[in-house]
Image 1 (cartoon, rainbow, N blue to C red):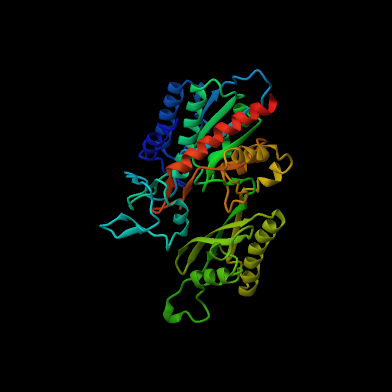
Image 2 (image 1 turned 135 degrees about the horizontal axis):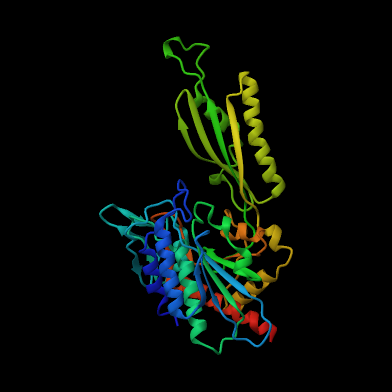
Length: 411
């Protein structure tokens, strides 16, 4: 049943598909295009219908035709092809069967270890088969585990005609990690009634609330003169930038917040005395508080400008995505179906807000309700990433059970 799941996953992660936020192409990297073409070939070989690649948005899509006599809703499953901003070349997965709960040495030469002291979540996987990195790269379970699970679920459904289901649509897209992949997603062309992204973490995750998100570029204009004659004349843009950041709520940062608490996150600061630039992301689950945060950061600039008597600080704000709960809460059928499917498989649903966003955040606001389901991986975006084989198997089971339960509910 799962014989191709792990080999498929390994093949995917050993194909480099890192996205590039500085690129102007769609997808942002040519490696994603090459990977998309291999996925097309695999979908065709499996026997999927309507396999295609959209040159405009970088998505591979395909259809599993209904085998039910009932009028069954069309369900979509979506995963992203790109990996995050961390080394993804020459991924060498390491397998740890019957994990004993102790420290895993990822790279002895470089003294890199995966320790339960640093990552207590490892204790949840005692007795499982873990797939880790060799310490030099990320793993790529985010989100190639999701792709492997969707592909394997389609393989199972195609091989077993006794599992009744409606039409199923699948989509594998680019550039989720840089926040633009879903911008051009073709909702009418996808033609599903609702969908799920397979892009979550541990077993049981079912998420339909995300952050509201914006980016802020803070530009600071200083005035540089010789330090020997700088008194009452020099304006140090870097120091002004530090004052700007100090004026933001110091407890409302990612490292001091959890749950539905929002934050201001300083991503980077560059510059010299003459000029500087700071990049922030702004997050909050509550739309009203989200708007207040954007106003607050603008007011900080205004107050510092008034204090200096010159407009030296400008703030450029850009919304990124919104809380998909605003859309999904209008009709919870999509959540109830996934929740029941998990319970049928003796998986305890974990329904919590995402402290981030997924492609489903944007796609939901495009008119296709798209919550997020676990793909099994943990410690995403770095050398400590891992996934349990058993978690990927359970995610595959959930996909099959969702489409089967959807058909049974109509019978």
